[in-house]
Amino acid sequence: MTFFILFLSGIFAYIVSTLSGGGGALIMLPIVGFYLGPQVVAPVVNLGNMIGRPARLYLFWKHIDWSITKFYVPAAIVGAILGGLVFAELNADWIQILLGIFLVSTVFQYRFGKKKASFPMKNIYFIPLGLVVSFVSTLFGATGPIMNPFYLNIGLIKEELIATKTANSFFVGIAQLGSYAFLGALHGKLWLYGALIGSGAVIGNIFGKRLLSKMSDEGFRKLVILLMMLSGLLMIGRSLEL
Image 1 (cartoon, rainbow, N blue to C red):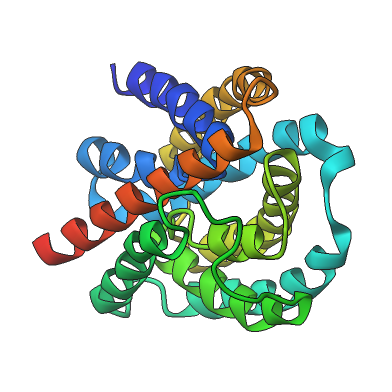
Image 2: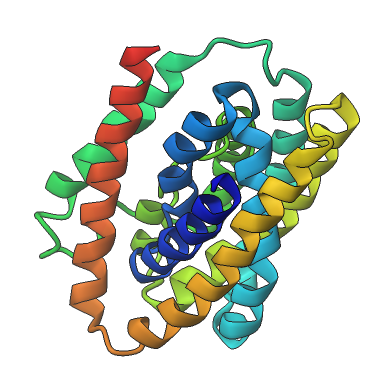
């Protein structure tokens, strides 16, 4: 039953993720935590993400903005390695609370989807962002669609946002999994659980892309902002419960 639920959850989570610019991992956090235990959430969810990314890369390859990736990825790999070194050693619930507040605030920053941008953004800003976001993601398994405001403000929308974000996450995911494996945090059946989520993610990506092509830019932006708000509230709620 656990196998079946993880697989179906992967399909659902990554349909939503494709349509709203991310958040699939955040949807999986409580599910994995309930069935497998909180101590394995981060490595299992990140493994599922990693398995699902090649399919999304293939589907969205021509839309990748490599000019952003070259700034984001090197710093993000360093952040992933550092995050792996302190995994399970750091109690940083306050970080999730701050990230959650930032995500909720995007509803007001974008005036409920009416604004196309809320603050100026340059490619070079992705260097510190990559370092910090990948560090936190390695610790918790997901940071929600925390990068979406930055992608939106630099002008990426729909396929371009999904493609560039996936390319960045793919390279960082390799470093994350390497860190988990080196530390012994990813072992035995955890590989199977992650593979089930990843298999569902592949199917979810395919269906999500078909639905995404039918959405308008404004509709996509509003859905992204809605998910950011919900993700922020979830992150705050989970942190306050711990």
